[in-house]
Amino acid sequence: MINNSMMSLISKLRKHGIKGISSIVLRKIFLIEIMKFHYLKIKLDYDLLKMQLKDFDLKVKELKYNDFLLGDKSLFQGKKMEVIKKRFDDPTYKAYGIVENGVLIYSAWISLNILGLPIKSDIKLEESEGYLEDDFCHPAYRGQGIHSKMNIYRKFKLCELGKKECIIVVLDGNLPAIQTQIKSGAKDLGCFYTGKIFGIPFVNLNKSKYDSY
Image (tube, rainbow, N blue to C red):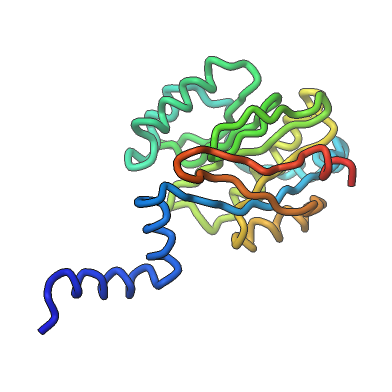
């Protein structure tokens, strides 16, 4: 007769698979969590971006902290809101997005100084570089091409702020996002790993190596 513990294990195996269960064990017991990312970079072309925005039909504005209070409560809460508040205290971060009928439909950030990663790092951007990060689309508005349009919009904003190059970091396995960036002219310069080993954060990105390609 199968006891409750065995039933629970079988249920978790069905839900997460062996790979998923192994990941959970490593994270919870050994405090090991490793993520693989692609490092993409694109040279910004002001005239091209301006042309691409010619028929831009989204009502985008520069967001304020209170706009995020109108976002999905399951996401925009706790530590997430603490991070957002810190960004608004830093003039090298800017947020753009869409608010309609009192609801945050889309939000996305640019960084002018730090290459932000899931594991806190102090990797600095070059003076000529900007970084796209942390975009969110309300579930009801996904699949409408908003993300692609907002990518163009943010790159144009980087141009206006004097940046010549744009960096994008994409989680390995997110092929649609990688292909979208490559299609827009970005080069996939390689992969790096970040995470925690025995609770100690690490990042093995050799930015100068990729930037020299």
